Structures are given as C-alpha cells and as structure tokens.
Image (cartoon, rainbow, N blue to C red; front, side):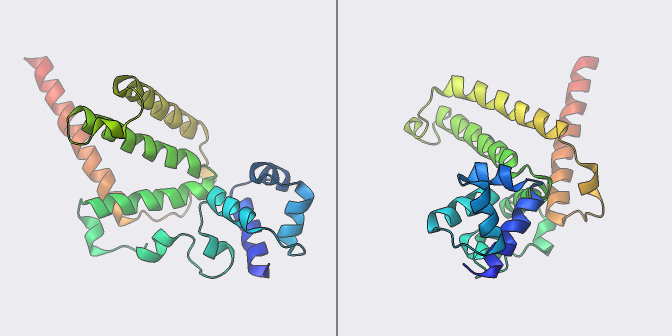
Length: 203
C-alpha cells in the first residue's frame, strides 16, 4: 500500500477528531493494525479500503492516491462558485448539500447530515406515494407510520447537531453562493408563511 494511502487515512481520522483506537473499532480492525496501516508498514485488504472509504465518505481512488478530489461527486461538479449558484434550481440544492457535507466532515458529523438528507427524501417519497405520483410498493413500511417516525428522527438529528456545536470550526469559512441562495430562498418562504399566519390571526 502506498504512502499516500497511509497519509490520507491518518488525515481523515484526525479530521474526525478520532483516536486510532476509536477508528479501528469502527472499521473492524485492531488498534495495532490501524497503526500499521497509518505508518505504511502493512498492506490492508481491498475490503478495508472499501470500508474506510464508506466510513470517511471519500472514494477509494482518493484513499489510494489515484485522484486528489475526495469524492466522484466533486470530480463531476466544480465546487467553486458558479453563476448558476445564484439561481434557485435543483443543481443548486444538490451543490449546497455537498458543500454542507464537506463542512460537517470537518466537524465530525457527516453521517448525521447524510441521514437527515436521506430522511428528507424518504418523507417526500412517502408523500409522492400517498399522492399517487409514484407506486406505493416503493415504500415497504406503512406510509403514515413511517412519515411520523421520519419526522421524529429528523428532529432528533437536529437536536444532536445543535448540541455538538463547534465554534472553532466556524472561523474564516466563506459562504458558498449555492448555500446562500438556498438559505435566502428558505427564509423567504418562512417570512411569507409567517406573514400569512399573522394576517389570519388579525382577522
């Protein structure tokens, strides 16, 4: 295994703020073996490379030093600001989620963000199934029950992320244009709905 793999494995673990012992446990190896991998004195199996890439949310090619971008998504989509990022479109939402994920990786909470996005899409799929837009067989659980539990899980993730605030990680972070666009659009929706509710109460 090349030295790039060892260096990147170490870097990814440290970015998560994890000890070798904790990382080894999560990846299903002993601490001594993890240490050998990070020092480049022991070759690991392909299975370990796959597990590590999934755990750290990077591509196997990145871990092995074949590419310098962490994920294939980053290879397909330029992560620098674009003119289109100022427009509220599906690609802007996608890019904003990728950039938020990158920030969460540095804070050690990427899995929670992915789970939140997954639950958001799942709830929309449940609504689509109930509305007849997609086949109900796409959803294996009871639609009504799963929607309720999905909402509860999303709120739980929000509480967990809020309790894990990391002020130091917020310093000197430039706001990506795509994130700014999504935030502004969302706040516009919130203000509009708040005004509507206020108007209804005043009647």
